[in-house]
Image 1 (cartoon, helix red, strand yellow):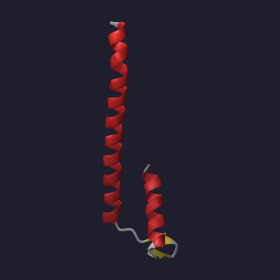
Image 2 (tube, one colour):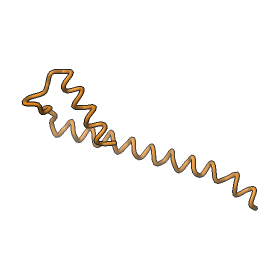
Image 3 (cartoon, one colour):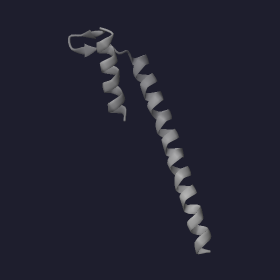
Image 4 (cartoon, one colour):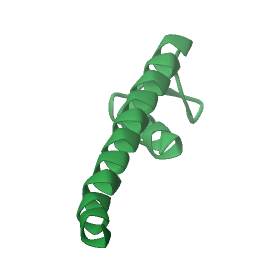
Length: 65
């Protein structure tokens, strides 16, 4: 997911004309913001996955008991 987001950032930098010698001019502050955004998204995704698994498991436990 991080690589997908990084390629999206490069495309946006290219559209804004901020490419120099074929490389985007992304600063460390921007990279840290991308990592934070990515980590928050992964945490929400993980939480959602566990909620779905719990929700799907509950009816099966009731039937087995």
